[in-house]
Image (tube, rainbow, N blue to C red; front, side, top):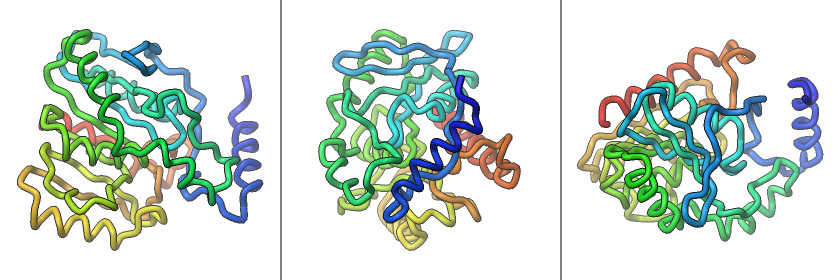
Length: 260
C-alpha cells in the first residue's frame, strides 16, 4: 500500500505541475480510507451506501465534491453519518464521467463542468429518493454536500420539499435569481479564508435569506478556515484545525438531529 507520505508527494507533484493556474479546490489531504459500506447500482448510477448498525428510517444523501463519489474523504463523512444512526448514500452524480483531477488545467474547468452542472441532477436525485424510500425504508431524508455538492445541496433545498434538512458545506448557487426561497431548513458552512467563495458572497447570501427565506436556516463562517476544511483536512495531522473541523462536523450532525 502506498504510504501517506508518498501520497502527499504525488499530490504535491500534481499541484506543482499546474502551478501557473492551480485549482483553488485542491486543498487538504486525501485520506487512506477504505470505507465501511458497499457500492451498489441505483437505477442508472453507481452509489456508495453505508447503513447504521441498528435499523433506521432516516437517510442522508451525501453529495461529492469535484473529485468525485469515490474520494475517500467523502466516504469517511458518509460513514460518520452511519455511525450516528443514518443510512448514508453517496451517488455518482457525474454518472460515470471522469471527476476533476488535480493534474488538470484549471483554465479548462468551466469546459469540464459543462456537462456536470450541480443544478442538473434531477433524474439522479429522483432515482436515489426512490431507492431510499423503497429499498431502505427511509421516511426522513436529508442531504449534505461539499464544494460542488454544497451547490447541489442548496439546489435540492430549493426544489425538493421531501428533503427535510440540508447542510451545504462551502457551496452556494450564484447564477440563479430565485435561490433564496428554501423549502427545507438548511445550514450553510463556510471558511473565512475560502478563495473560492469570498466573504462578500457569503454575506450577500445571508442578507437575502433574511429578506426572503421562510424556513429555518443558518450561515456559519469558521475563522481562519479555507475551502475544503470540513472533509479535506484530517484532525489528527492538522492540530491547529482540529477544533474547527470537529465543531463543523458536530454542527452538521446536530442540524440533522434537530430536523429529522
